[in-house]
Image (cartoon, rainbow, N blue to C red; front, side, top):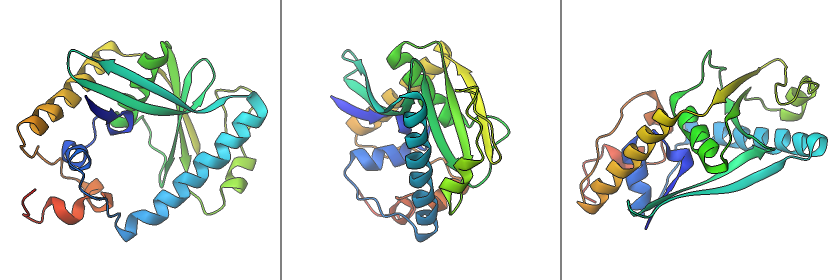
Length: 202
């Protein structure tokens, strides 16, 4: 049974393939500050939401596909009848990012919720100061500077597309074939960019 992660939904399939092959991650130096700030935002905002609204943090979800020989595992950042995903970004997007929608959609399916939320929070060196500006009165629709909230309904078509995406990676694994890379600006932040375009055999 192959275990995929919900956070891998609709990202570059080669990155998922490398992980499943056991290739070690080597995060580029340029990515490390982003990762650290993102972890702090998750920790701080999660703590505040738990203290104020008694939410559950890191709720485990597993979606099983026994006939397909695979499972999708994930941990919802924040859960209280509906899933909330916290995404720290160096910029605030004007609309939800595709792979974030796919990840949240898996959680909606996993907990049988009709809708959930994406919280985009601008990365900062001082997350406590950023959180102090947030107004929580209308939770889950919180408001504040450097923050954008999207309410997202469950999408059955997207769910099927995401399952197909993971199953195709499974076929690449079974055939021991390297899937195509989705080249773009994200490549410089990828923990496998050191080997992806090196021409080495796997």
